[in-house]
Length: 140
Image (cartoon, rainbow, N blue to C red; front, side, top):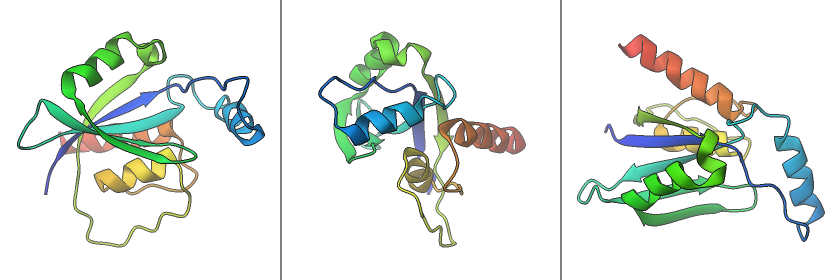
């Protein structure tokens, strides 16, 4: 199986005044990550209808999975203020034949699992990005 996924590396929204203590603490922790690489989410166009995509967004408190028009996704990337510093790359998902335990529930480990990429629990979105860039460089 080889499926094309778009990975979106981006910043996160700032916490709102009514955010819980844990949400404010998480926002503070994420502030130490590289700007533009504080979160990763994945988008996968449907094979039978490439105008529609699955948007996979693993968040700290839940995982959001929904269908969206591909045009809407691309407009959000181009126009949403948070997305102005986003980096979008295209990757080919792989079937993994070995077991890949996922110790941490982070955006990185979840997206890496979806695309069949090995990752470590302490990886940041930027580390996943550089790892994928190195893999793509070796494949060329």
